[in-house]
Length: 80
Image (cartoon, rainbow, N blue to C red; front, top):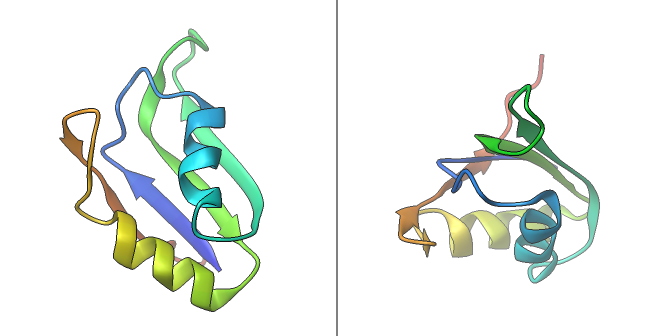
């Protein structure tokens, strides 16, 4: 299941994002969208989790969670 994480702290690294989601299960891929300076994030990223039940647990556990003083948002990514 593909997820999107929004309202992430700008100083968050891709490794930080991966660790956050790995605590809920198997992560197939993780991509933090970066500004053109490649130093700071744009505040959102995409995560693909192998198992739907783990992805749903990540949504339930992380959506609205305060992370570095910001309430992050996690939801299923829309397919294009």
